[in-house]
Image (tube, rainbow, N blue to C red; front, side):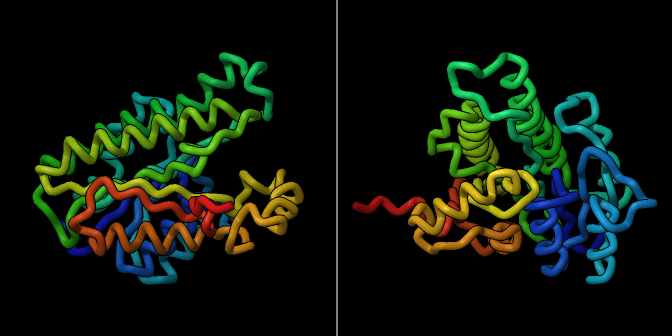
Length: 261
């Protein structure tokens, strides 16, 4: 049995997922990193780059490539973690996609809607189901088991040019609540983290637009969020710092949640 706590992080190859994986490794977690692909010959990007950074920190890393939208891959992803580390203590549901094109809600296509929800909602829901069953089977390890959903302020804030993304994140927020309710009695805490405007590949295309809006006061703290901001919050939850707060929602948005005149 692995003596260190093990975290499985989806979408770990870049952006917020990378920030979370590194933060957990700094806190002493071995990491199973999931992303669409793992290219061991390309060490500058993706899961291979994350693997090198985590090994530099002295922690174990196991790549687990696969598309979480493919429900048939879920058990294989779980078995990849178990074969390497024998357990999973923390699941971080970070993987998510944006619409390929921003369209007015009146022009949202069924294809785009289905594509976004397949990953952000459906895939994440059933992956959580798979891993929660494993957490119920296994004895508790070095930390109390936990599941963290990375949603978005878009779960509660409307963006009419990416309706499918907002809907997917609102549904994910409710999924976190339902799993928290179901698993509380078994000692498995479930949390939701809602990032605001975070500097990642996903937001790079709208950087100029958001630079102007942040400067104009959209974000009271007047800066972009960084993947490290999310990583630190997830690490605190994974450590058990909020052990008596299952169902907790943490918004990391630089104050966008403040209602003010």
